[in-house]
Image 1 (cartoon, rainbow, N blue to C red):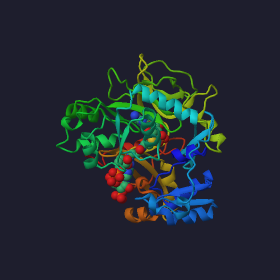
Image 2 (image 1 turned 90 degrees about the vertical axis):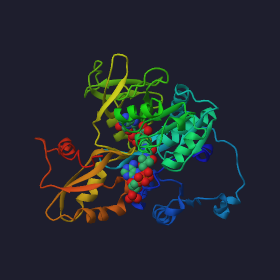
Image 3 (image 1 turned 30 degrees about the vertical axis):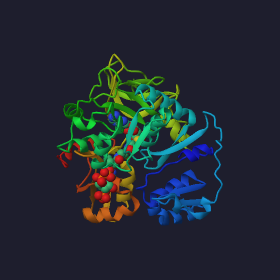
Image 4 (image 1 turned 135 degrees about the vertical axis):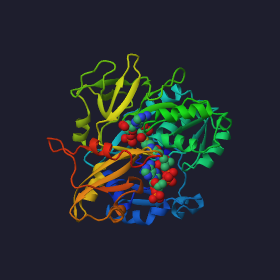
Amino acid sequence: YLGTLQVGAVYVPLNTAYTAAEVDYFVSNARPVVLVSDPASAEALQEVCRQRSVASHISLASSSWQQMPPALLEVEPDWSVCQRSSDDLAAFLYTSGTTGRSKGAMLSHGNLLSNAHSLADLWRFDADDCLLHALPIFHIHGLFVALHCALLSACRVQFIPAFEPVAVRRALAKGTSVMMGVPTFYTRLLEQADFGSSEVAGVRLFISGSAPMTQQVHQQWRERTGHSILERYGMTEAGMIASNPYDGDRMPGTVGFALPGVELRIADADGNELPPGETGSIEIRSPGLFRGYWQMPEKTAEDMRPDGFFITGDLGSMDAQGRLSITGRSKDLVISGGYNIYPKEIELLIDQLPGVTESAVIGVPHPDLGEAVVAVVVGKNPPAGQELLERISPELARFKQPRKVVFQDSLPRNSMGKVQKNQLREAYRGLFKA
Ligand code: MLC
Ligand code: AMP
């Protein structure tokens, strides 16, 4: 990542769980010059690179630099930094829309730097800190929010490649001062009966985000560790938007106050600001706001108000003091273990299967992941649940695949003919009881 920025190029991280079919779309849309891959997927991606005429494909050896391609090892190191201005693009990250096709959210150097400074100040990072980092580094949470705070403050990072409770507990007890995670991290640690305050004596701050944290988890964490988790709210297009305070009350069920420089409003359908306490569309304007979707100006225009406010797709309310609570989403999105999953992408695959008339993919409460994906399928003679999953799995990363498939005679629709997903979510909300 840093090497890419250093040479003045634009970085496009992708989830390593994506299938070759998924990567093919990103490559066709981003048109990269170089693709760097995990050795495990190198063979499948080599074909993608060939078909899409990617000039260079580098497979990283997982364990050692010695296993890098010999040609690379012979290159003379060049430590010069290509200067970029704050308006230049640093990265774009794919995030999907209701159409099911992902859009690359373009972020400039200025976007990233302004957000990083706000967060490092607000959360009081300094060189004595030690950040426990167990998040994936292909989304903004692990890559920008966590790493940028650490890089700006020049603190230590205990990097754990994937969330694993034993390794995380060991790191917490051994010098960690700050941990950032998605709510599932906290739920999984609480499941460990012997986990408690003695292990986190050196920690000054626990931060959660990317998905809603329940009041119950917040409460249990405080009882078990003595710490009040600081919940914050953000999104790929805008970086971090709001945060509970470092000093003062961290209120469960709220995501706190707008970050410095962020203008936040709750609006009606036309973008008119609503009074405190009323629920509406969360809209923001800030120096961290993205530069639009890569080569999709019409999609950018759909989400922007004429006055420069961005329509986040989240619903919420703000109290008289400016404290924000997120109450729902207007976008059709499932957040499972902090990963965003767009139902349309899965519905399109299911609908292509013989015997299927139509489908609706929804998220329902799940004790570990927050929400889990369920496919509701209608058809004359559709493939049975397991077979259906096997048919779509070559196209779809594992984390997006439905955890359950249920069959119905028809889907509930309103008078406009739109599928009533809220009715389906209600009907199946008990599928994954703890
Ligand atoms: C893994 N699996 C998931 C999953 N993660 N399924 C659904 N949802 C997920 N999030 C699959 C695995 O492939 C595996 O499939 C099975 O579920 C069980 O895996 P596991 O071992 O229990 O999962 P694990 O690898 O431990 O991962 C769970 C997790 C991880 C929660 C630790 O998903 C994670 O690190 N999530 C963080 C995502 C994140 O960083 N989001 C930030 C986005 S940025 P099988 O078949 O092999 O059993 C953003 C903006 C903001 O949202 O505000 O920050
Ligand atoms: P992404 O598009 O992956 O960046 O995910 C951004 C989305 O995650 C937001 O639009 C919200 O819906 C959700 N999100 C992030 N933080 C929180 C939070 N603290 N509580 C509820 N939802 C959140």
